[in-house]
Length: 299
Ligand code: HEM
Image (cartoon, rainbow, N blue to C red; front, side, top):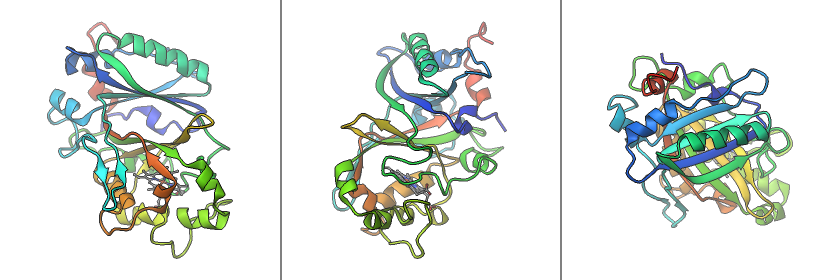
């Protein structure tokens, strides 16, 4: 199998930054892939910064027709539920995800990368992220309880050996703004029904309310995904950067349909307190797949 980009699994990073970029007018996808493959972070084991790069699925397919799972597509149109609830598709060409132990390194590396890509890509969206009370999202609930362990995560997140795009991963990236005042006005017992878990210790309800978030995204129904969600924002405008990796697109897409109530008219209760502002799918190729685009001089 190709070597996965290691940052996908680099947990415990306290400073993160997501940049989504578009091809500069007149630039070619091949030039973009070369510039991305040529990015060089001065990695050190003490204060290195992880960089994960992903491409719009159609762009990557244009470069390598057999380079990713065949049916993978971008988030090319809004997803609208039966009651009109909307998840916007705001697809861009490239994502760069920086993560590290402190923001100074992340900031420096991001600026260097943007400079390295300046002739081929322009930043369209920028979201810094930071952990909240160790492992909680801004609802105050523990986020990631049902994630696979790091031992299991590669088999969940990576395209298996022998398949197109082996060692790569499909990433769903969505920035969700929280209606914090409305959420915090709910008694904790009501918040727990929305999530389908207890707030202090994330114990799953049995049975889970049918419109609870845990029920609408139940991995026993839709398949497993590996989430790297991170809080973002300022005092007025804040929420969750949903970051989900999977070996195939379908589980992620079906979870979104389910949250919007598309299969059965039942909308995820969490969507009454949060709404997505962005939505993109990216293909995160293996290290080897990306490296083949590097300039001959780059090592
Ligand atoms: C505002 C956005 C979101 C917030 C605050 C949020 C928060 C949470 C929380 C607190 C849990 C329970 C603990 C856990 O198992 O991690 C959870 C579970 C989960 N969420 Fe989300 N989530 C959000 C969006 C999404 C989206 C967009 C997806 C999928 C596309 C998703 C997929 C899942 C999955 C798969 C689980 C575990 C379900 C299970 O098998 O029990 N979440 N989320």
